[in-house]
Image (tube, rainbow, N blue to C red; front, side, top):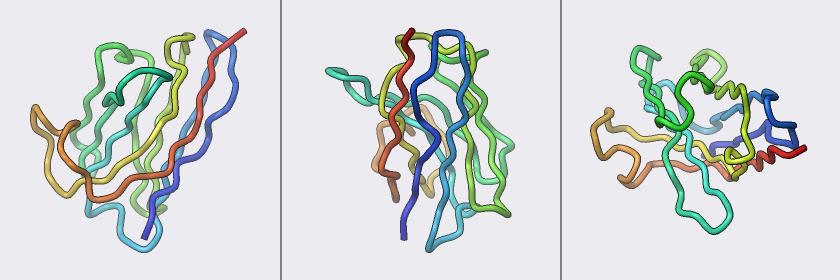
Length: 124
């Protein structure tokens, strides 16, 4: 049972990347999914959320209008399309699954599953 995040890499400011989060050993569609990130020397923060069937999404203010979360339950995969990337987006990005629906504390509550993280570096 695991989540695997991938798609990170080095990108120039203003560029784009698409992260993927693939579940194995369980049905991703049974869970709400969040993307988190942790920059060097900083605490982990919630970036984006998507409900089980994609009907509800939310974003941190710092990424609104630049990032888009989506999911394909048939492929057991959630995506994070990142655009207009900035150096401050540099971080290790993680996906996490939670059976609980979204609420004001969703990003700080314990999660059922975590992915291993993928590094995104935005630099010229």
